Length: 94
Image (cartoon, rainbow, N blue to C red; front, side, top):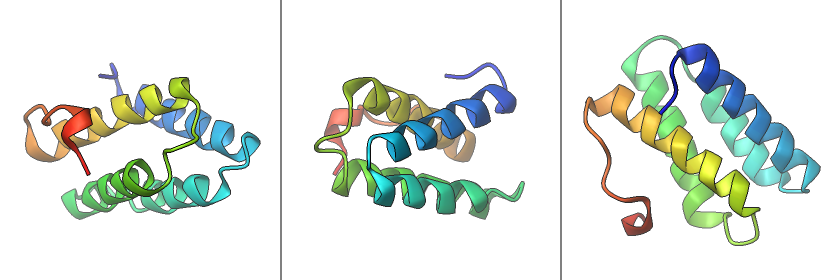
């Protein structure tokens, strides 16, 4: 998990940039849309979590392993922000 929101936000921006460089434009756009939904309220974080899950479930087949690890860390952090508990293991999703 990340030490601060600033660290989380930096990781999200880096992941989006990496996805764009790797020609995963749909995944990058999906994460951008979700990330822009963060409004300080729970519903914004929930929309971001949905976008993370969408990328993981539908578009992660060819994404670099390091980027998938970063996506997992972001997912776990956002899930904890929403539910105040650790999520089930990443491999059980989908």
